[in-house]
Image (cartoon, rainbow, N blue to C red; front, side, top):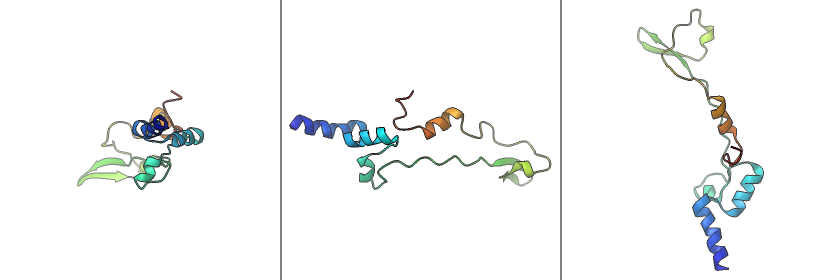
Length: 105
């Protein structure tokens, strides 16, 4: 009986979830753990919300102005920010992936 008890305690230390949590997570595809309950959080990790659109920021006389809908502007000036303005398909796939994400990769 002692090795079983140690094994059940060891899975929380190693996987941050109990064996029933692991089975429930695998079946539902959600990240669920009794450890989250111990932290005062929900049993299953909520699905990440979609990333809000990045504002379109341009230079102005006073500094920088940001716009939610640049397509409404008559002459769209150059944007101040550089780089990607939304998640790549790979990042979005990982954001929406079922738990555990590493099994399907």
